[in-house]
Image 1 (tube, one colour):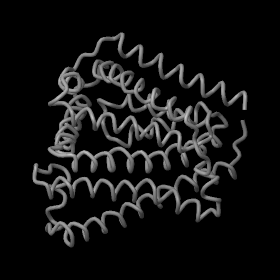
Image 2: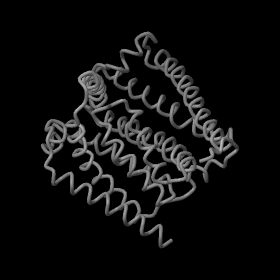
Image 3: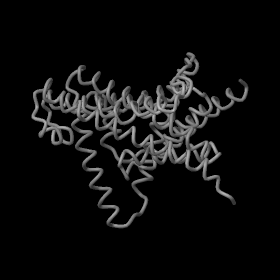
Image 4: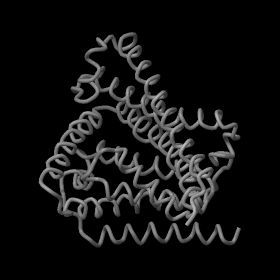
Amino acid sequence: MEIDWKRAWYFISQILSTLGFAFVGLFVAQTFALLVAKGIFHFDPEQMGDIVSNPSHDFGQVMFARTFQMITSLGFFAMPVFFYCRFYHYPTLSTLRINKRFTLVQFIGVVVFAVGALFAMFLLSDINSRIPMPDSLRLKAQAMAEVQERAITAMMYMPSVVHLFANILVVGLVAAFGEELMFRGLLQPLFKNWTKSIHLGILITAALFSAIHFDLNGFLPRMAIGMAFGYLFYWTGNLWITILAHFINNSIEVLIYYFKDSISWCNYFIEVKYMPISWGLLGFVVVGFILFLFKRKAKLA
């Protein structure tokens, strides 16, 4: 089989330029975050690493950790996508498929999809935790999980509605917007064109989407939800749909943490490590059914 080196190099150059834009965006974002830390929150920039990785329940520290996450998310995920479109002279709105609206029926379907996906992900998390791995890798996974657990516990400290809305903005909206722009809006079409297969394109993009979270214990559920988002984007041709699904999925988790002390079943999701298999299977059925409806609608359009 003869390799089309011109096509291969063009793809490689696109990936390398995307990585370059991402690191430039991250550098700009972190520099801006340093200025915010000193100018608005009055923190010593040398304290920034400790505050971000392990903030206390101090209002200023928690809010800065959220601000830092918002700035870096936009810098590393969203900004590079717009730089990419400008660099290659692509029309931004149509290239990223953010030039369409969604209907009320689509909105309802996405809400049901996001709720079902949450239950399916809990089941996959349980399966993921049972996958055997070498001791060295298992210890690394545990260390990653402990770091993430500390960060999540600090971020999800929400003693008031102000904290809740801050997390809905940062964890829900900004994370969904930036990650969907990068993975579904930019990378999925690139890998689809390179592999000449939508299924491989979705699979590779979903694997990268999961890997970027640096959480081995959550790799399988994140990859699965990434694939679901990928097909949702492919069959709707509308990135706002996947942004909405991602936003709802993340926001439900935020709300679960917020109401964990007042609503018993919310605390169940956090404290209880086992979920009835039937709940997870029902989640898979719901997700599959909604994706089938979107696929059917795409074929009829």
